[in-house]
Figure 1: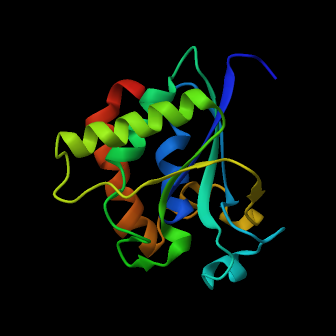
Figure 2: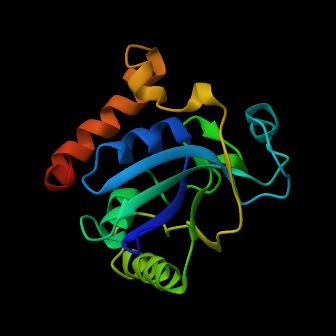
Figure 3: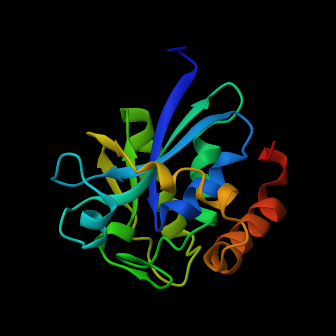
Length: 179
């Protein structure tokens, strides 16, 4: 793998939403939905949805750090979900919808911890950030029907009500990062 290519693993609620947010950023090579952070090998959507595997719905982003920085990805992450709600994003409730950063190296860990401290110190939100920062161990790809969910189902109700507004917010706030 090219030394400029890195991976970032984020959990911020439903992976359909987070996948859609990061897919069209400059420098992002791929975004895969999946499961991580739990204690079960080869989890399925049905098992993770039950909330008993310890896994979060997450995305694995491969990105070219010469084009987009990990700091930029963190900024997008913290501005496109609510990092102050424990084990929930909107109507999605359970540990599988927690806010988490699974760092792949020490630099990512430090940057993630620093931005959380900065957000809390500056009272960027009405409540403290509860985003978990945890060492990345293993990522399990989601089933094929979850991949490119928004792109393949733009007209679906969930996509129109939940994902489309996130993408509008992304365009307004981060237009300079969009392909």
